[in-house]
Image (cartoon, rainbow over all chains, first blue to last red; front, top):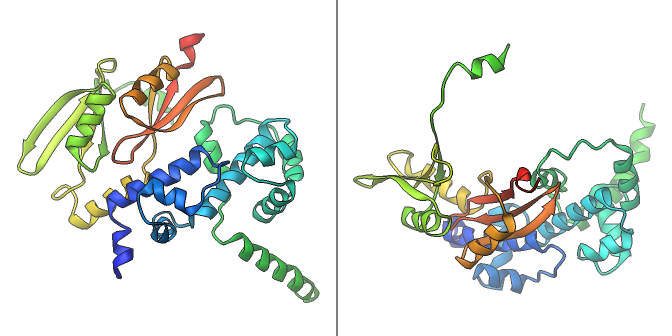
Length: 165
Length: 147
C-alpha cells in the first residue's frame, strides 16, 4: 500500500476529516470549496479530497450534494414553502440547477416528490429526525454527470430491449 | 411468546455500557471535566485500564471508557476500531436533559465540540456534540420538562 493511502487510516486524521463532514452536515447550504474543508481538517487542499473519499467512500462535494438533496426533500415534505425558496435555502443559486440536479439524483422533480409525499400517510413523528434524514439520504455512489450519462444511454437502449420478446 | 412476562422475572439493578475511546486520559477529562460525570471505577493492570464513569443523576448507569487494545482485541482489530470511532461511525449516544439550550450554552463554554446547535423539532429541542474520539451524542430535551 502506498504512503498516502496508509496515512489516510491514521485515526487522528480521520477525526479531523470527520470534523469537515460534520461542518458540511451542520451547514450544507453554505459553499464548501476544498480550501475551506481542508482548513477545517488541517490538511492541504491537494490531499483533502482524496483523504475524504478514502475515509467516507464518496468525494466531499458529492457528499455535500446528497445532504442538500436530503434537506430539500425534507422541506418539500414538511413545509409549504415555494420550491424556489427551498432551492435557495438549501444551497443552490438557481431553480434550474436545483431542479435538474434533484431529478438526476432522485428520479423525480421536486414538484412530483412533494405531491407523492403529500399523498402518502405520515407516521414519522415517532422517528428521531436523524434517522429520518439518514433514511432519506440519496445513495449517490456515482457522480451526477456519470448518472446522467448512464441514464441517457439507458433511454437510447430501451426500445431495443422492449422489441425482444 | 409473551416477552412482557419474561422481562419482569429478572431484576436489573444496574447497567454498564462501554464506549471505545482513543485515549482514556483525554476521555476522562472530557466526560468528567466537561460533561459532569464522576469516576466510578479506575483500575489498572499493566497496560489495561478499566475506567467507568457515572452521572450523579443516573447512579444505576455506568459508562465505560475503554481503549481498543490487546489483549482484549488483537492489534489489527484495535486499529480498525480506532478508525471506525474516528470516522464517527458508531451509533450516537443520547443524553436526555431538562433544558437543551441551557446545557448547550454551558457545555459550549467548556469547549465541547457541537456539531449541531439546539434545534426545535417534533415538540422537543435537540443538539449534537462529539467526544474527542469521535463518538457522537444527541442531547435531547425531555418532552415532559415543559409540559
